[in-house]
Length: 247
Ligand SMILES: Nc1ncnc2c1ncn2[C@@H]1O[C@H](COP(=O)(O)OP(=O)(O)OP(=O)(O)O)[C@@H](O)[C@H]1O
Image (cartoon, rainbow, N blue to C red):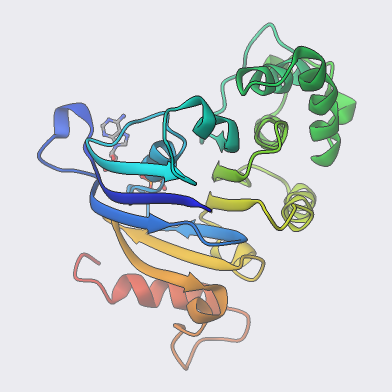
C-alpha cells in the first residue's frame, strides 16, 4: 500500500520536446526517503506530480489503487511546496487549519490539530502571528506543520529544512523520527550530509533519471574508498553524479 508512479512523463508547457520526466517509474518505500539531485534534476516536478498538483502527460499515479487527483488520494497525501505561500491575513494557526480543512477535516478538528502540529515544530508560541510577519525559517515550519495537520499517510516535502537554523533542523529530524511507522516520507534536500544518516532510503535524481534508489546504507557504500571520514554521503553523491555522462 504505497504511492506508485507508473510510466509517467511530464513536460512544462512551452518545453514539450524536453520532458522533465519520461517513462518514469517509482514506488515509494517504507520510512523516510530523501530525494537528492542537482538543481533542475526534476525533484520538485516529481513531488508536484505525486502531490497531484500537476498531472502527468502520460502514465498513472496511485496510492493503494486510488488515482492521483481524487479526493481519496488527496486526503492521504500531504505536500509541502518549495515556496510556501504567506496567506497574508491569516495567522500561522489559521493557515495550518485552513490546509487541514481543505484536506477534508472538520473546522473544529482542523483548528485543534493545527495547534498540535505547530507544537510539534516548536512554533506554538507564534500560533497567533500573521504568516506575513514570520521569518523564512519560521514559514517553513508552518509548511511542515501544514503537512502534519491531517495525519496523512505520505508526506511529500520539498526542501523542508532550507533556511532553518541548526536547532530547528534538529527539531525537524525529531519530528521525522516521531512519525508513525505507517507514514512514508519523500523529501527533497540539498543537505546530503545532514540527512543521509537519518533516512531509511535515498533516491538520486539527475536529468529526470534515477541514478540510485535503495537503502541509505547502500547509498553510503557508493562512496569511493579514499573518502574522508564523515564525508561518506557527500562522497557517494558526488561519485554517483560523476559516473553519469552529463556531469
Ligand atoms: N514552471 C516551469 N516552467 C518551465 N520549466 C520549468 C518550470 N519549473 C521547472 N522547470 C524546469 O524543469 C526542470 C526541473 O525543475 P525542478 O524544479 O523540478 O528541478 P529541481 O530538481 O527541483 O531543482 P532545484 O534543486 O533547483 O529545486 C528544470 O529544467 C526547470 O528549469
